[in-house]
Amino acid sequence: MRALLQRVSECSVTILGTEKSRIQKGLLVLVGIEEADSEEDIEWLCGKIARLRIFPDADGVMNRSVVESQGELLVVSQFTLHASTKKGNRPSYIRAARPETAIPLYEKMVAQLAAETGRPVKTGEFGADMKVSLVNDGPVTIWIDTKEKE
Image 1 (tube, rainbow, N blue to C red):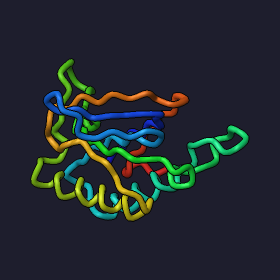
Image 2 (image 1 turned 90 degrees about the horizontal axis):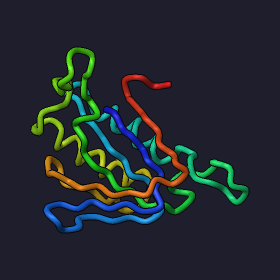
Image 3 (image 1 turned 60 degrees about the vertical axis):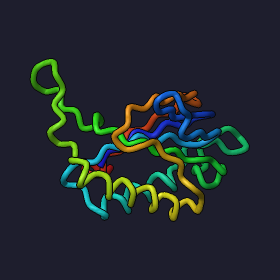
Image 4 (image 1 turned 90 degrees about the vertical axis):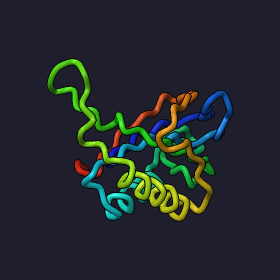
């Protein structure tokens, strides 16, 4: 499972011209699910997202989590995070999970992240053509892959 976290001052998802979700200060989490992912990956990733200290404290030092800073969360599925560009110029998405695998894992991730943070999690719509608008705060952008735990 891969996640691209962006600390945002605001973010929204629009589908077919209608705004689906909007957050203010918080995290946009773009998540890519592959066939090999499991609930273990979800638990580890959600714990990491909830506790990652990337928000400023009173001294301006990145020392607070999204929970401590009372930030909001917006999770958007993005299979293209598993693009392979090793060969040729057309990315391959063969590692991305098929919807019958990915949708239940995505829904479990959203529920687990809400449990970890104690706050509601807003979402995009799995498989939809979404327009994501954001103001990256910092900018702070962090890549996490559960298969490459550091």
